[in-house]
Image (tube, rainbow, N blue to C red; front, side):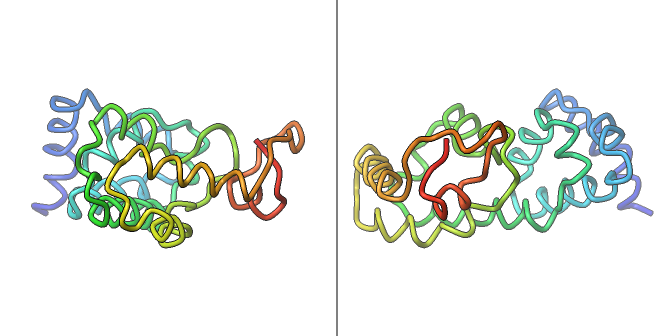
Length: 170
């Protein structure tokens, strides 16, 4: 009973006042996937990812809300956290850059995938020992250029894994 009171009354009020986030509105937009959204919010809070979850959910398209898989997104957050802890400059990235350029789960309308979790170790191996954030970015960009070239695949976007496999994309 206490957990229900917390989730349905206190948590939405707290989130709305702190983040300008209305959990009930997001849950309603998720339709039949509302329970998964609730689980995602709760699990994110428990693991210390509450602010990340709120930021993503507050800007998430309805198509993502109705298809959100809590386990996938928690795995995504775990991979982000793992990488931040492994690099010496991880915690120096300011909130704006993190939220708008690292945290988003997709770039455009490409199919969802957990690229961060799949490639976390591969990309870390490229930048292991690099003390400077700028040099790390350049190394990852160089790796990217060896994997693919720019070419529109079709009128629909493809995800990063497909682009790497095909060797072209945008």
